[in-house]
Length: 165
Ligand code: SF4
Ligand code: SF4
Image (cartoon, rainbow, N blue to C red):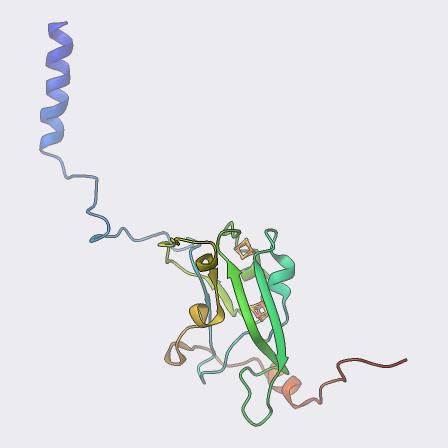
């Protein structure tokens, strides 16, 4: 009994002189791993155009059916993206998302990226739907040039939306 008490006290004394392993969250935040998958961001090219071309491959790849993409034709005079189309609506339901990264893997233009932000909380279901305005990075955060193929596609006339047989 007495031996056990001494052993417990020795453990306490030993740890009194060690660096604490706890951090004062939220004032102090631990860096996450390089490959950590957190909140999504919709990226831009260096010229400010949106990388997303509204192809909806991310939505097709998503196993949780968390992504909604509604595409629209670009105005040739003032295109939003270098392709024929852009995402007029882009939403992710964060309550459904399991952060698997399949959407990132499926994206042909590296538009959707799971970044390192992990502080996600909401008070109601509606707030769990992250809209394009929330996901799209600011214009000055763009990087990389559009692939030549996308620029060629933009010059090609769009096919009619519906073909009458
Ligand atoms: S990370 Fe996975 S579950 Fe979340 S939106 Fe992307 S594909 Fe869907
Ligand atoms: S994020 Fe990528 S995969 Fe999804 S619609 Fe935009 S371009 Fe297509």
